[in-house]
Image 1: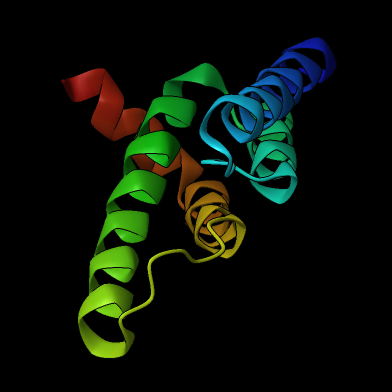
Image 2: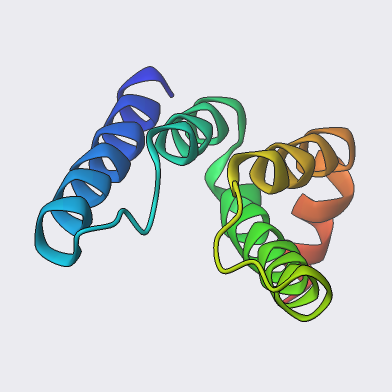
Length: 102
């Protein structure tokens, strides 16, 4: 758990630094990387994939909504990941059962 969480957070920080260097703007921020690391610590692998899909779907919906309503191009993704993490933790047993049926 701890090693996996640290590796995920480290990979996120490397991605943030690389995109900031090459593209001039980070695609993923440090808070996002830390949120991924915390999720890696808290969730078993069977639920982690569901968490990533849920966070991605929520982030996409929020991003499109903010773009349409306010014209914003960027938004903080960590709050969306923490919402998906909360859901994944609360419904962990049901999600493991769902993944097992697939």
